[in-house]
Figure (cartoon, rainbow, N blue to C red):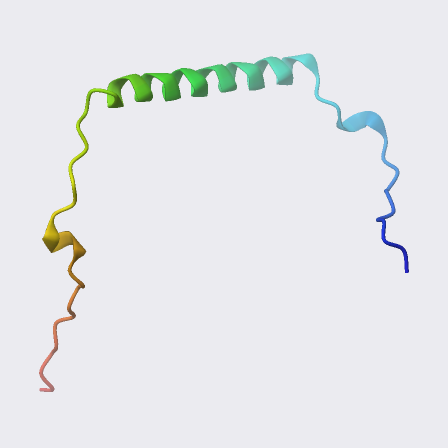
Length: 66
C-alpha cells in the first residue's frame, strides 16, 4: 500500500477564459466593497447585550388529550 495518492491525468481544458476571469474579478470586487461598507456602517452601532428572556429555555405548550 502506498502513502501517496495517484494523480489522474487531465487535459488543460479546465482553464478559465479571460471573460470568465473578468466576471469573477468583478464579483470579488463587489463582495469586498459590500464587506467594507458593512464594516464602516457597523463601526458606529453599539452592541446590545442579549436580554435575560432570550437566554431562558423555550417551554413547549402541552395540549390536553381531548
